[in-house]
Length: 307
Image: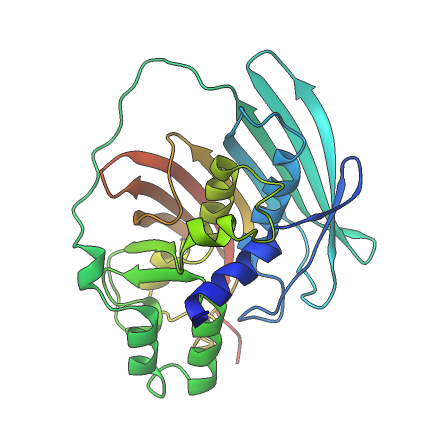
């Protein structure tokens, strides 16, 4: 088994929550590139917990979440699901994630039976072929020792090993001091063979439907780069180079059309504003065929460390 497949299996195991009561689940954590649980992990696990209490023919169409406290990567997380409503077309769930007796994360998610309706979308913005862009394994060593320490570059590479994430332009940590337009694009897909992993009985294969899994994997990735555009507007490199302190505050996603997490997806991101120690990031996720699949909005803490 190659390293990419092993990393993908580790990520799928992370989404394989243990049911400890009817609507109570327990998830494991793992070390992140910062000394707290990665926000995308908590959001994805919470959505898995909610989805496991909903009929399989109702995929999620939206989520709204708040990050309340830093998660401890050395401790499991308990997810309690409240069955708020089961309607004829829509199902609503609320999830509270708890560690050490305190809530660290709240999520509300809505699920819908598939139906036909009016349809339009914004066009997909231009972007180069993802296969022409450098891989993380190519781009991170290029900048190690310049703005990134080699140790941080290695941690970034390890943390994102399950995801093939390719920047269209240079990432913030590569252009510290250069003020750029507050826009960023990345292509991403899962690393390794997702179909094979599920066929071989990967951790979550018997508890999560494929449509729900694809959405949860995209939820996981959605928190990786959304605040980059804020950094670009100020020539900052982010936590990786230590010139800002940041953390996600809240996160909202709307799932418009079906997608597959193992196909290339374009994440088009921008920041309309930053102020008062906070910044706003907006994102649109398109399939390679040009369909608008997901809209994302997140606000985060963005503070400049004091000397």
